[in-house]
Length: 167
Image (cartoon, helix red, strand yellow):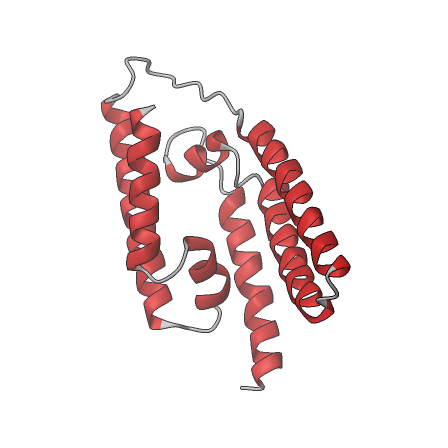
């Protein structure tokens, strides 16, 4: 449990230090060729792969040679989605009843974008610890599917950003 707390702190610290989350830099910054995003993602990947492989092969947190990861993350993602859905709908109802139509549309669009992003994370498997673990650790169970998802996302956003910004 302490590992989750330390990890959460480090992720939050890195997000603050990098002026954005890994997904934001990866999905939006890389296709726009932002130097900060390329540096942030390169540093994050180097550290993630290094530490994941070190802990995997050195068995620091476990004595098991074949670590079995229990994935409760999909259950948590569903629970958080339901809670978020209830909170956002309550907020939308409040805005509509208080005649704040302009704010309603702004929040609704934000909600749709966030919902689509979260749904993409769930469908692609980015919320599964084992999926991410097997992407970062180079062994016989290495899973390249997340690299394919990242590559596809990069390509699609590169095309869309070029079309939107007409560069």
